[in-house]
Length: 402
Image 1 (spheres, rainbow, N blue to C red):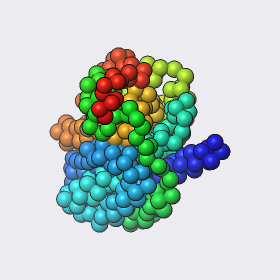
Image 2: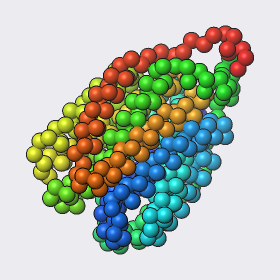
Image 3: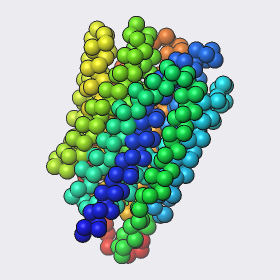
């Protein structure tokens, strides 16, 4: 028992460090939108498309990296993902065209994030801890990603101001290589298939036949739309409204800081109350926060309050959503099934970041996208209300043939 606890604790620490690095480096990408777009004469749509593609690639490959982690363990997947992440940052630092941005910030970093973030690492955590502690453990690891966003953002801004955007990205690429030794030390043993457990194909068919699984996917689409639109376009929105660049970076840092508390609290609450109901309330409150931010007078103070409030709600969806997947379907294929749900999150991310840039270039403002984000909050709250998190009762005949 002591050895098991020690193994779980080590995996929590290593997984937290990897996800903190991966999410922390990514959180500052919005700061590069204005300097890169201005230097090369791009509309904001070029930068926005590259990051939209990044989120799309991240999501499309997540079920496959999750399945590989379920089959071979998380360590190999993290090392490969970390390598691609570092290469993407280095190439982004030398990019001077839309094609270069697409290949580096879009494809390589998207693949890197797929192997170093939530589905792979939370799948390993879900396999390592007892069911009664799973929601809390996922909350801790998600909170580590939030800490990385908070801790690394001031450093990203400092590098940007000191070295310029190109050299700053090269330094960030060097930092990303730290994920390789950390990932290599993750001792994640894939769960041996037990009698009566479903194989991969049957697990996919089972999930596809569950209405709640698709409701969860659609709800996570909304989460991705909102958070990535805000992360990428909020600094530009504040700058357009006369606030200093430092205000935007401070708001993103506040998001990361209060996200730590929000994700930890969500994990704790998820172990005690209905996770679908918690998600419904979370999305409703998000809608209220965004509405107040957009329609009340804008100032540095209101921007900071928005960063605090939205930070508490930022990644709180992650431990609750993955916790529902684990509760309903078990942990045998958790990384893969969680990856499918996360794919919808990234489809939403693609739409949020791309639509933000596209409509901005057409209209000169973000008003329409803010209103869409508010409407989606209401829709997501309604979707989660009808999800049942009780474990599936499988027919003996299905278990026997799987």
